[in-house]
Length: 119
Image (cartoon, rainbow, N blue to C red; front, side, top):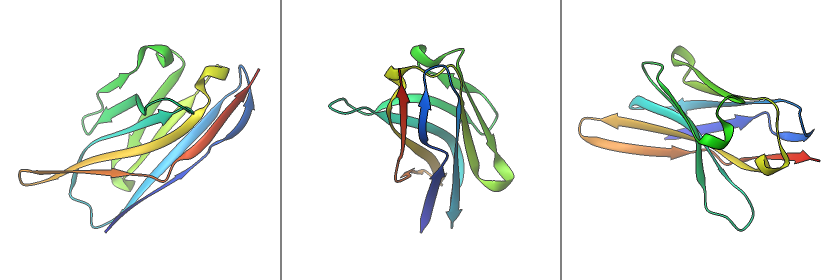
């Protein structure tokens, strides 16, 4: 069983910074992509950023230049550094791990961590 444990959310003023962490544990197939999604009240869950096992990153346009994503492959951990936060970044942030064993792809999700940015 795979478990994702997130940490680092909280309340911050606009312009501030937060760093999210997500550690995967358990019997994990080969991890391909690690990433973060977010869901604001009344909205669909959306991609924030992803990082591949080779270090290639992808960001949704609203966060590009403000957020960075990184991972520690040895510890199966992914980080999201969020700078210059805006009230519209307020959401529950979910960690995602996409892994593969053979031809089977697995998607794992964290429990979510609340990020609130006050104006």
